[in-house]
Image (cartoon, rainbow, N blue to C red):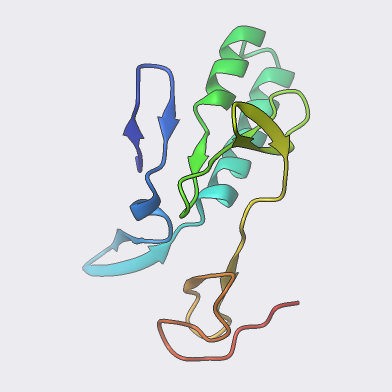
Length: 131
């Protein structure tokens, strides 16, 4: 699992981990797969919501598990999904502000996840679709 622990209850992804490829082994081949930590956290949140809905997770355990999905962006800002609403919040000066996290652009040519500020894929040079 990507991440480093700050304490026993919080899992925060380090900025150097954002967008770095993960190696996946398929037979004899190694595939490089880029991971968007915000999309990953959203997917995990949906799984937790479903587990909570069917009764497999108590309210306190659900809140703690959602808190463990915290992400640090490339600028060192902390992001967290709200346990009740699934909306992203960013930590600013001791307050949580509702905000949209920085998104990555996926190259249609090679599948690499690029930062939103890029116009061309850093992996293959293909122009990125911003729609």
